[in-house]
Image (cartoon, rainbow, N blue to C red; front, side):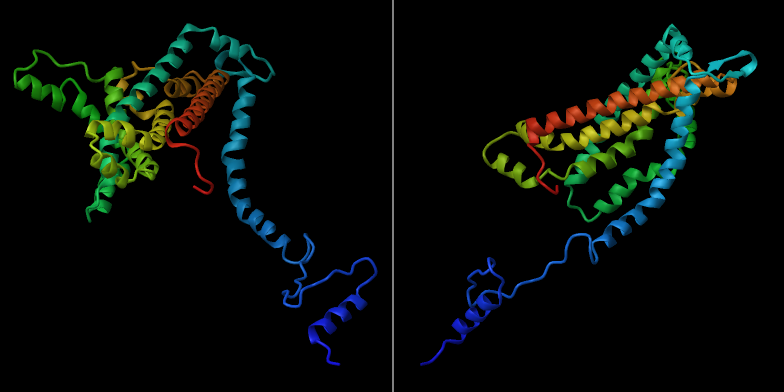
Length: 333
């Protein structure tokens, strides 16, 4: 009688297995692989490596952001004395003084107004440029993008002084309009909110263009061609396809420009001529000129609170846009 080798192997395994653990195994089954228990072998290596790589960045954030923020919060609980003295207390009296003053509420309102106006005008003039750069297939696309962000190579202080020469009462615009006989006197384009908005719009345009280009990844030209082939006019294609797919990038650019304009100091100080009071200039005046560090700290905390409100609104708007126009993001996108 002949014995099948596969049957003999299964019988031997059944005899060697302990009682209660004998299971039938096909002859052509792959060999068993011994998986080491979790926590042994190389399991700890990636975690320690990741922690070691994150340590320098976490330390930098702790020293440059977290500790100064804690110091500002602590300073806001102190009270101001005469001659720049600071009384070390844990009181909300300085918050009450600031929030009870109409002047500081006007400063907060002017700051939000400036941020809103700069954001709106920056998006209006930057969107066509970013859309063109995102859709063009020219071999000069890289050069065009570089030219769009070239102003970032020049200091914002230098660009602000340039706008002072352009917008001043004896600047290029007023001189040209007066020489052409279009106006009798110089237009008030400087030392007011109008000049600050104009200069800030140009200064923040490169940031908006870069943010929009990076957020236009969902814009597929094939969708536009498909809609056009079905008879949709250009306005409908833009309103139903292009605009919804580019809204995430526009929203990101709006957040970036709004935050930058809220914290801007150089342009409101120089173009405003000391007549445009925003939180950044007011914090500087309170801390350096008046030596009132508790009030400056409270204004800084209020500015951070405005940032928090803006970011919260941005996150809600982003979720609403995702649900209304583009749908939920795919995993890993």
